[in-house]
Length: 306
Ligand SMILES: [Zn+2]
Image (cartoon, rainbow, N blue to C red; front, side, top):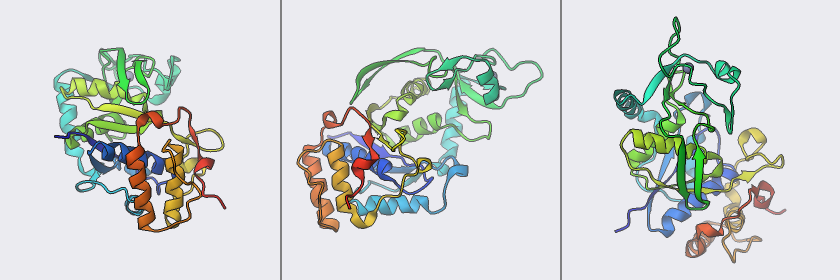
């Protein structure tokens, strides 16, 4: 019996662009070649960042590219009670503490980490006199985490240098990405998380949460991200344009070639669902994580010629 359960979890802050489409293709291929289930979750917990109509547009794009998902679409905004329950469990276990510090106060402490300022531990033993709680943080009880990534192999990450005690409930009352992701992946029974390497630093945080919640952590595969001309990750804010659904087969051919699928004709001229199906069938028979490039994928490689 196969037990692989994967997922794709886009944020509805805009339409899929070539970078997010590439992530979807990799995640879908890994699930389908292992006869697994592939769920679609709209990570819309951060309502202020949501763009009206973006979630529906993402669904239409996945559909146009033949990337079918299993079961109903899950929306994070509808699972808030589960986050509250998880937070109560962490509180009961003494794994979290209220924190009065603002971002600026954490930065002013001057401890530089890999992903920005490191929390100096100010409120670990109680709130400073006369100050109220702004956020809730998870107490780091294990500093070093060795992970086995499906693409990168064995890695040891230092959670202290990654930022130390991290926020699980934000000052605006929203649940933080780390907690929401762990609760939602666990609820879906996700066994394999496939996502961009920019999220590698989340792994020890999420492993810590799984451990604190007494749940089994999934396996991880981190893939290269698509970068814009400025060498930063392709994003709407860096000028990424939406994926061109009208030329789906040509776009898909270039994505497949960029992620290492051999024998793809990137001058692909055929259009329509049957051309897409043929490409995906070819990709499913060739996909292996070892084929992924070791460098970021330039967005220019994914643009349709002419
Ligand atoms: Zn604090």
